[in-house]
Length: 427
Ligand code: 87F
Image 1 (cartoon, helix red, strand yellow):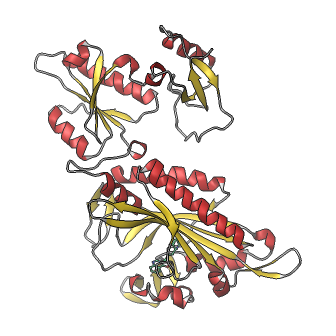
Image 2 (cartoon, rainbow, N blue to C red):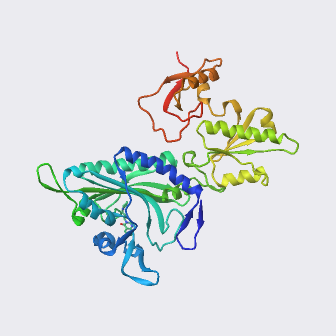
Image 3 (cartoon, helix red, strand yellow):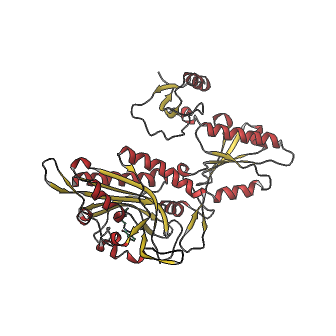
């Protein structure tokens, strides 16, 4: 996931880690856009006068601020700080942009890096001197609107942990001592690492009250021509999320990745024996990858000939791939594959015909699946499911549509999916 770097507390995020970040980013970015929050980008640098404008808030954090003092060999006239967070970077412009009540709410987010020159022991993802995050900064006319947003954002953070990273969290409010000193109150999602018996802050959503508005003069005139001061929030989650996931799910064999965030969800490993039909096994692996990819599953095969199957098993276990599929001579003969779960090591043989899973149907269930909305495919599903218990057909596309992420493929055709649709046997 990472590579060490020659500056203490800095790490290279390799594709295996970055892809997890990107999957969470796609989700969160779409959700905040639904809330009419807009993305922007502010500079990395802060002038000392602006950074130190809010003395109280910066006081405790000052030792962690990194400064640029030189360009080439000459000293800068005034040192420039590197953002540790962007309240002081952004709020002078909130003051400029907010004049009347029609300028509110102002809801901005940025995806960026921040630098905090920590001295306590650096740990990849958990405590690094530079890290990636999103920081949301919003301003409202009323406290009530700000209060509501604090909890909406906190719920998105819960979903990142619980739905994407498969980590249970507790939502709650920080004590006066533990809250962000510059704000009114702080809410957070807290996770727990069983191995070390420690809690860990997963993300924070702050109501800043009017403290910053006072400092930066973020004022507006209401409908009646009266002066008001903006109510503000700020909220963030960072690449620390990945560190929590590593610690919660990892085991003695290495990483254990939750399927939703794993860049490879299924790794297919050919297991050729000396006199076996090697080409046949390789072809079956390729067909398996095709079937799974067609069903919207991120599957790859490991065809390398200079590594043994056993070596590959350990390799992909260490990398945390949720499911391994092995195909050997016996599997080839029986038109089946062997699937092994990373989390439980449970093994099952699955027929190649039911690989992309209409298992639910044989269990008398209804199926909600992404569909390309083509009649040909609808007919094909009927044909393919025609068995003793009767064929499955489309039931309806629910008005209440779950999110359909960009790139989702139809469960039956592998074409781009247009909608979620229920399928099953019907009276
Ligand atoms: C380190 C150096 C300078 C944390 C710092 O939580 C300033 C700070 O203000 C600092 N470390 N903080 C608090 C950050 C508060 C707030 N900022 C926006 C968040 C969410 C995103």
